Length: 227
Image (cartoon, rainbow, N blue to C red; front, top):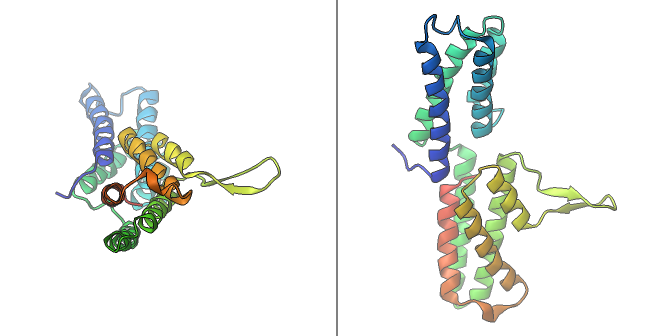
């Protein structure tokens, strides 16, 4: 079994609760075919919503769920039986670390390279440049996470100009979308604070040791919460 992040544990718990609801319905007299249509429909919506929310609407899991729904839509219990199989497969893949896509691994490698550059700068005594590079890497990762979770990273102002949302705003929206935990959100806020100090030449407000610790923490964050 691969390493499971806190967010993946939340996903697994959600999916297993949905599966438990299915099994409880199946145990009732008459099994699925005699259950109230609204209960069956509600469970189908929960499965489809959970799979699309966790994996994205274009994932093989989501496409398979949609296929079963459209193929057996006139027999409510049939798509449910097949869809629960997709859900079980998804749980197994998350538990074994198979859900991480190739693009996620590529992004992680690229950002790790930048953080290695920051480590090198620290070793050469350039803590401020290292802080800027580390903060920029974090912000780039937040934007990649927004793309993954369907969050728009910009907005249109009153004059019709398109502007980028601030990194802290992205952090807030990502936490609300359950891209990562509330504790991670607090950590990201603190890391962005150090980045802002470096960007605004407040060089005396942090030490090289703090930059080193933040760089290590961001490296761990990018690994645990891939984009």
